[in-house]
Image 1 (cartoon, chains in turn orange, blue, purple, cyan):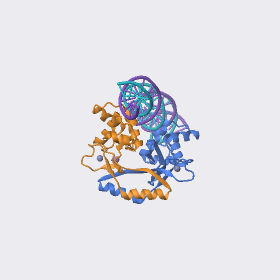
Image 2 (spheres, helix red, strand yellow):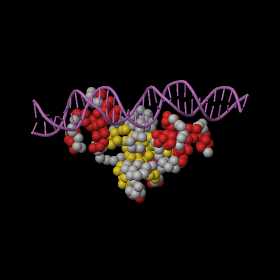
Image 3 (cartoon, rainbow over the protein chains, first blue to last red):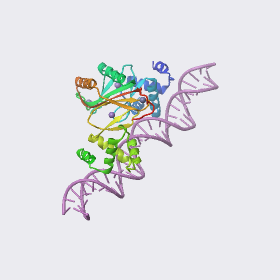
Image 4 (cartoon, chains in turn blue, red, orange, yellow):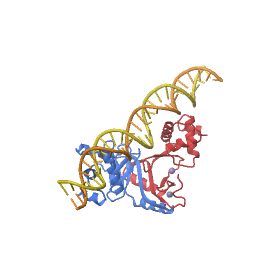
Length: 141
Length: 141
DNA sequence: AGTTAAGATAATAAGCACTCTCAATAAGCC
DNA sequence: GGCTTATTGAGAGTGCTTATTATCTTAACT
Ligand SMILES: [Mn+2]
Ligand SMILES: [Mn+2]
Ligand SMILES: [Zn+2]
Ligand SMILES: [Zn+2]
């Protein structure tokens, strides 16, 4: 039940928040801009304002329900936080996004930060390139 | 001579381009927004338009003279490309930026990309946190 | 050095992603 | 159900960046 998730996150359970959360949980696309979330909701006949989508996504980020990325181009992209940190490979040709996690990289980062007396909050590793998948150029995620 | 660097990069040597390039080479700050470049030039009495600064920085990026970063917040930040790739630690408290390079991380990235059939163009690793430096809260770079 | 054509600049307008304002609405609590 | 207060939606506003265009520079050629 999504209303429980919202309550646990310290947010009042409202229709627009439920809609956005449900969409992020059920959408094919894992990584979406605010505009994409808005359009997807409109297509489902859910009447939510664009300002509300931006507001709600920002609240979700503050509450830890979603993660925000600033990919190349500077656009904010959101994805549901499912508890498992991961990094990203981004195909600049077809727009597809692949996720990965590498323990060696993660631990090297911690070592570097420690050596420099730096307390890590967060990090992101974006690898840009071209995927060799058969359906490159056609898909998007 | 900066005019040679511009010619080598396939760009006509003009006064505004020279000014921007010189500034990036001589500035204390390695990582600057377009606005910061613009203001710094104004302070030196160099009369360059803001639109020109944006245009020139974008041309420099295309020519490989500078690198553009999209740090948290979505602002574009530029730095001179001095041939040595590096990644970044960013203090969210004082704004200071530290650079590092780690061969282990670099080679793991190549392995991950290869395993996924991905041809890397570029990558960026940003570690956000708080630096323990005595002058945290006061400096900026 | 002066001429000329191609290319670059400056100022301003426009575009775009995002945020703010505020009256209307909906949640949560008696 | 009514009350109190947080949330919403529409549109205006903001801030960063790009496009337009008339003017000016640069670089190559007399
Ligand atoms: Mn992801
Ligand atoms: Mn750097
Ligand atoms: Zn692809
Ligand atoms: Zn600091």
